Image 1 (spheres, rainbow, N blue to C red):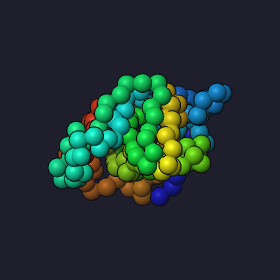
Image 2: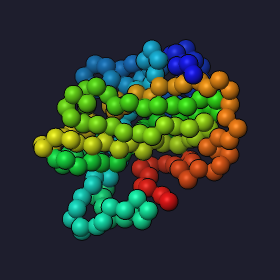
Image 3: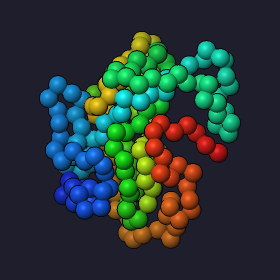
Length: 184
């Protein structure tokens, strides 16, 4: 597998809508950076958050997840409680080519503050808004800024297309829009 450069990312974004909206150059002044970088794309967090709460003392069960575990907020700045997390999403909508796998890493600005961004790999032919799991590992409240960079996506080209893509097997998170809760 080879990591794909800015020229390939730009071409795919412009010719096939791989990333929409697409920011062609990295924006940095006064914000946590986002946009095209040398070997990746720094995506922005949308102003749509689901903040984890234990108000109703709901059991966390990945096989039967309750939406009661979250409080919804639409805001430019989200406060994550200490030792908790939020679900958010990218502003960008992604369409992954059949022969590409995408890995996501959190931004160092957040990581250096104890804020961890987790995303599972984007599989070949997956498309949608990416749901971001953002954890505050500190004992203090932490801020997340909507419209600014949250994570970087790295595009890896396979030696060939897979026999079965995410679209072929009709994956459960295909075409997701908005912040998507766990599904079984």
